[in-house]
Length: 358
Ligand code: HEM
Ligand code: HEM
Image (cartoon, rainbow, N blue to C red; front, top):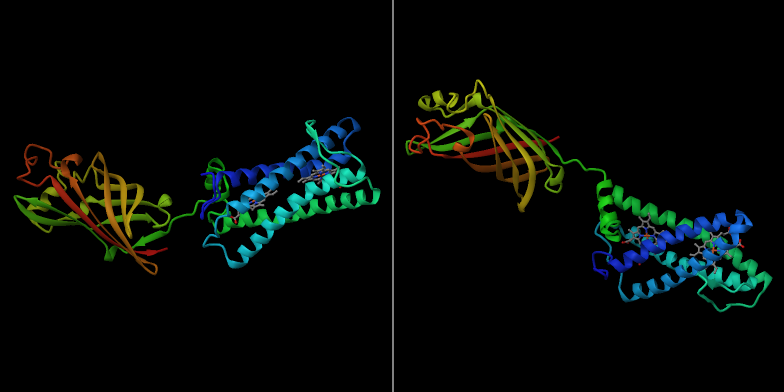
């Protein structure tokens, strides 16, 4: 938590980063504006500019020691070699200027003959004797260093934004506190999952149960599947499968007469059965669970369906199976059929879909 790991910055490095960052931005703004202030407030602002500037010097020395003791995390796989080199140059340059900046301020004050007092608590020793030309030199150095910091920060922040919004990697999130990270996470443009167009000719939804103790199979020939799915973006994946129950058949005349009957699928009142995915979870390589609901007639029941998702180029084959208890969907619950000896309560449903990425 406190220390950096190979993957992420720790709390101490993060705190140094954001504390120094905010204070330095404040000092830059105040520094550029303070010369134009009215005399009544000007002296107070100069006093606090110097005190806070010395705080930055102290923090930067502590931060440098911490950086030497606790190495920065390694580059991420998304970082290109030139980005790593550029980031290192900018980071080291920022360390250097953030130490040089308060030092030149202190030197400038000493050369002007003003002893630096920190927050009214104690005075710092004068680094040089009063000297007008030296004072002018340090004023100029302080001024040019301010622009150097601005230039480096422009590069630094542009790099951070590129990693966050273009490369969409963890660079910024591993430097932020959880709360900022959460905000950044939600600020990331939602990346849509892949849309899939199902090839209905090559796809099949089938069911299997026992009738009078022997197995029978059936199919649902007409269905539509609206699928948006990416294995690496389960959060934005969606699926809705609408099955036309009028197209359900077993190929056995004695059974098919019953399928659409009111005791079973009651197809004239409820032509559609709908499976709606609410969440996807990964269970193994290429294996997932869809957690959703299945609506048959006016019964909506939660259902988890494991499936495999295999892709070759832009083609996907999705195969899955689930076991349903027909009694949970009001299928054959009348006295004539409720006994398992008529039709088993458990019905297996399997599907195999072929789809092309849009
Ligand atoms: C919007 C503002 C900022 C963002 C998003 C930001 C982001 C970052 C990130 C992501 C890193 C880690 C880079 C990596 O893992 O390679 C970093 C490091 C660093 N940042 Fe910033 N930064 C910001 C402002 C600042 C400011 C204002 C300063 C200085 C005044 C600063 C100074 C540094 C330094 C010196 C490092 C190197 C840290 C180390 O490795 O010890 N940053 N920054
Ligand atoms: C990271 C720390 C610091 C930053 C970012 C910073 C920033 C600035 C900036 C932007 C200016 C305006 C430059 C100009 O217009 O000439 C300025 C002026 C000044 N700073 Fe700082 N400063 C820092 C630390 C210090 C310290 C530690 C001192 C003294 C102990 C100091 C003393 C002054 C003084 C006296 C001026 C007025 C210079 C003049 O006569 O025009 N600064 N600072």
